[in-house]
Image (tube, rainbow, N blue to C red; front, side, top):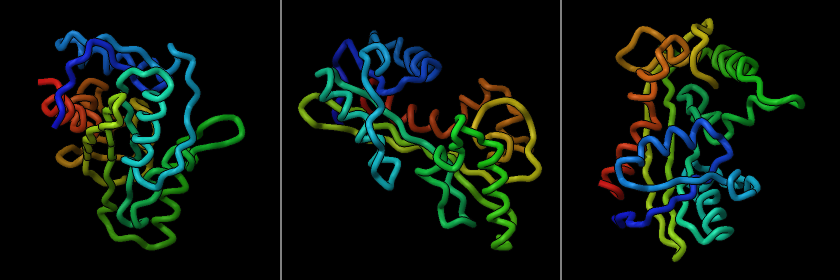
Length: 202
């Protein structure tokens, strides 16, 4: 496992909220962060069929464009009763000509489970893969998982994406009903980041 000993890290995202969240996590280690948007980088095409593959594309594209080490993530939801779908296509299921509509995506997901007469509880997992890449081509991969089940109808207006129908293991509320900070503490992304910090920064 390679330790990160640099002072500057590019976060391969255009999401300002994600950048701030990561900057906060890395602040104890004296690392300054910037984003793809800060460097005027485009979003690379995600052509892989796994979270790891797509995260690698994003991290290495950012490294190649700037010469800086880069951290990327790819995440989504896998549903047992749909053979792991939507998986890496989680955001695609929400795409419309006018932007992403996750209410539509959640409705489709539940309808497909109903059509298959999928067994209850309808198990699902939020997954996150982080890739930290260096200019010499080396990378380290960290995967985080939050297991749970899908519920219907949708509950709560917190969070985003599939949060209103995802009830994490050990809770009787959905991510959509959960305080943002509590969710961030237990989420798939928190799991992956804990492994990243332990592996490369601590």
